[in-house]
Length: 139
Image (cartoon, rainbow, N blue to C red; front, side, top):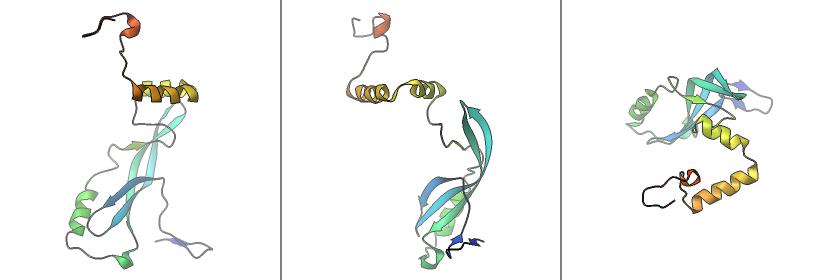
């Protein structure tokens, strides 16, 4: 399965990223991206589609304490097809809209920090600058 290096360690798997960790009844598994395909570029940022994943039990199988329902839970989780519609990028935040990302990328760092602090501390009216009257307001 793995390749032995000069340090005596074995390479279990090569991966492009970590999807996450999951725990059932016996312990934790790490879910790794083992195959990817480049789908797009957004502003010079590569967007990849997950093609294949691999689950590895942590810790090693030699210290595993068996539970009768573990295989069932594992099978149910593996029925989720992570290769169907899961995308990722190393440098672009796919959890926000393009408009938001472009706005954030154009802001100087100092301005971004002060704006983040300000929006947490006070609410604002999006129509205030337009001179429109809002419900319950006079502005």
